[in-house]
Length: 92
Image (cartoon, rainbow, N blue to C red; front, side, top):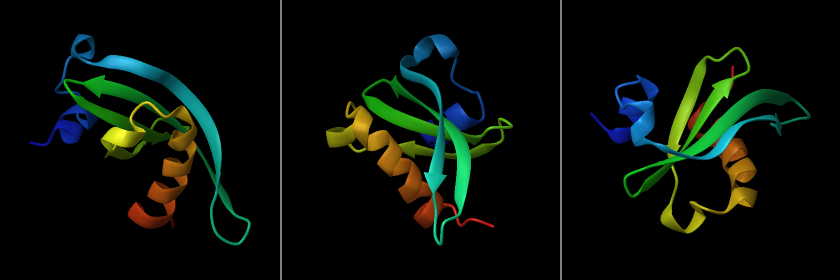
């Protein structure tokens, strides 16, 4: 099972992950003036960094493994949210 799936399903213990950014709510602009409200957190497990994205109702949307160059760039977290919602998860 891949690391991000283990996090999504809760297989990793909380103590084994290092929290980088706690849950942050964001309103993400989609296409044609629509938006989606989500929350996300960023954490490190081992040498890998992840961004976990959820609905405000706490339903999982996606967990993204961050590329090494963006792992500690807080400004890029919001950009990645839009990318995930537009290109990875197809909005309904």
